[in-house]
Image (cartoon, rainbow, N blue to C red):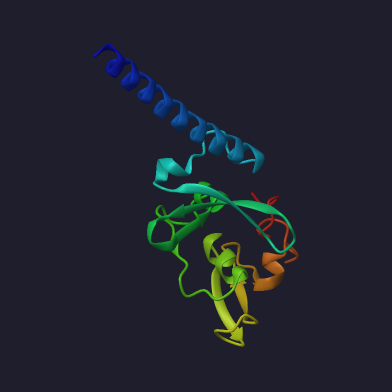
Length: 150
């Protein structure tokens, strides 16, 4: 009977250790992306993942149920709704990036193909070619889609 109790205690300790390691790894991931100290996707019901822009710049994405996503800084700044945006239907990674960062995507050519072209209208009023926005070369200083535009 004593052995059974010991095994239960060991099992609970392992479970708690695993949870704290997951929390620590998400916290260190947030640190590496230079997110605010108290940012936590789990607090909003999601999990933090790292994606890479066309330029190679890494950014955090909160992944939610039902294929909903928000770029982490867009959540922090209120440009993406809590619970995320449904990204099904966006054909390219550039279109998804536009939407999850708070932009409004409009197709301009080659609709529903991997070569789809479009524009991303930003909250600042700037309208960019979606691929330039995704690659961090939109040419704006405040809302360019690069990690520097916090």
